[in-house]
Length: 482
Image (tube, rainbow, N blue to C red; front, side, top):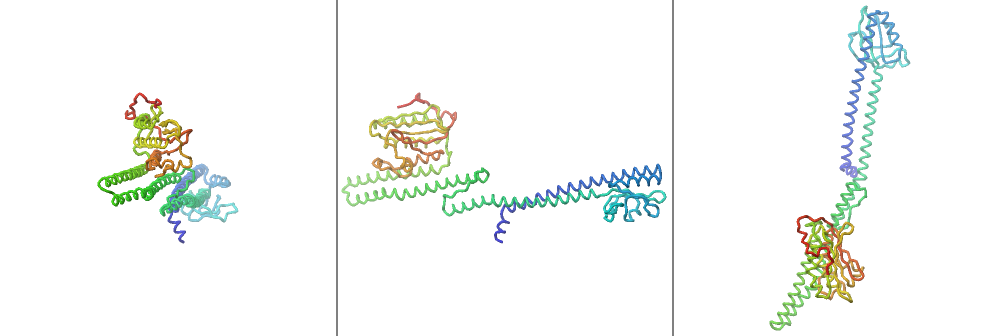
């Protein structure tokens, strides 16, 4: 009973009932309309046929009297059609015709009016079977009575055929409604139940649940794809929040403990003003380091919470790369290396200029810190090119590279490889690059060259906006700069 109640409350059941009701009413109206109009048309044909017969017999009676009328009716009565004739004398005795039995009142009321009667036809095996007809009765001179009519058998058969068609159609409508309900309940409701089940799984804390996609690209597939994209976004944000919490709990514990230890040592062992000043300066350096970590974490969190396409505009990559290169070229030269750029003129990308500039800065600083070759001078190259309908923006060096097994791990927060722990840093630079790349619909990828490492992200190409803000060529546009 509970299962039946559940089915009757579903949208599929209500839609099926509505479908059956609407089509039943429409079909009934159509069949009744057709039946009534057909019956009216056939009745008019009967009346016209009877009137035509009467007119012909009246002409015969006027020209030849009763004798010719009897001969004409006798001749016509022998034809096995739907026409009916009967001529009686003043005593009611039948003189000629093809009617065996008829209600006497029909002959007594010989007023010429059209009426429906039941009769038995003469000269057939089914003479005891009553049939229906439309007749007119007239009284002639000498007490004679003339009846002319038309059998309604064909009209009644057609009416019965329409009635049977209506009953059959109603049965078909009910079956179609049942089939529709079964289809909707087994297919559509199953998809809805899957969505409900997945929603319950997510509400219980499992954000990895996803809606099934049948692959036929219907409205449920499109809904499932959009919801899955939303769930992936929510899972990413929740995971980012968890990562930030875990990172703060684990990776900041050491510097905070170190900060506390230095303060305790200063309070216990510092001698004089100079000792306290050194302790305060060391503490200040440690707090600056902590603030940089917090600021980096907050910026990554803000980037990951931004919707894709936020504050995007056509950006001249040639100009932007030239500005970053101009800023870092002296630093690279101080390290005994050189900085090269290779960006085609007029190459634009749909991006957030500030974030992409930060990406170039982070990747360049990484190459400057960790991309030194064992032998020879450091070479850092910033380049961009259009490839497979995406703009590939990369920073490469000629150092030792990153082992393939560690290339995914270094993108995580606070991850620093053993060989880089001697260098200053927080381990958050590549995490920020990864977040920016995802915001722009791409990802951060590494590729070991021979020698060196190439770090690249891909952006959506764009056309110049025509405002002139992305232009400003300095005469070196499109050239290889070193």
